[in-house]
Image (tube, rainbow, N blue to C red):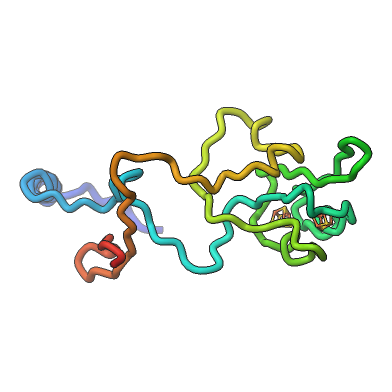
Length: 163
Ligand code: SF4
Ligand code: SF4
């Protein structure tokens, strides 16, 4: 077993000074590592899997989406005599199986990913909410600047405009 050794106070002091120096350096010359969200947003790659949208009019109620879901996130509901899926985003792992299995393309992945809910009940979308188009851009004074990540040897990741 390694014996406990009292730390050298001079070494400790030097480490504290070094930490303060790092803090002062960033105070004088800030190195921002976050995005100015929502004025800036990351460009999403092709095929990005965000919230799923149900097209109620297209769905034939076959239940395949609910059957294939590995996370038990999709259940069928009956609305005016028609079977329609509802989704629980508290369980969904965004695998996309339900979208792929749908024989009539009644489910589509959107690119919406930045959502927030105040309680867990709101994570369950009934067929009506599931049918809603959340893919509407939030109105902003200026257009959102699309950014991409680049690897910086000193900082790790840096965001630059995605021209
Ligand atoms: S994306 Fe995957 S986990 Fe989410 S509802 Fe569809 S099948 Fe289930
Ligand atoms: S797989 Fe498609 S058609 Fe079948 S219930 Fe699900 S959404 Fe409707």
